[in-house]
Image (tube, rainbow, N blue to C red; front, side, top):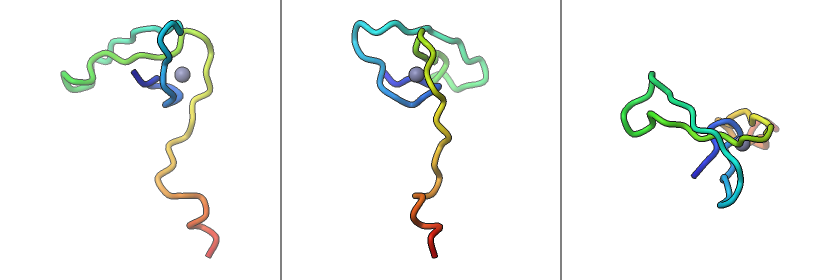
Amino acid sequence: MICARCDQPIQPGERYVQVDNPGASAAGATLHIHADRCVPVPHQTYPANSFGR
Ligand SMILES: [Zn+2]
């Protein structure tokens, strides 16, 4: 499963927390995040090097 906070895979055996997300559709009603502190990554809409022009 994928951590909803940092977008990294949660490995088997790694602690995680289930978070209900009432605003989501049925498929995404439950989110999983790392139990330990993880760093939220900003979602990159564009590749960084596309701004170099
Ligand atoms: Zn995480």
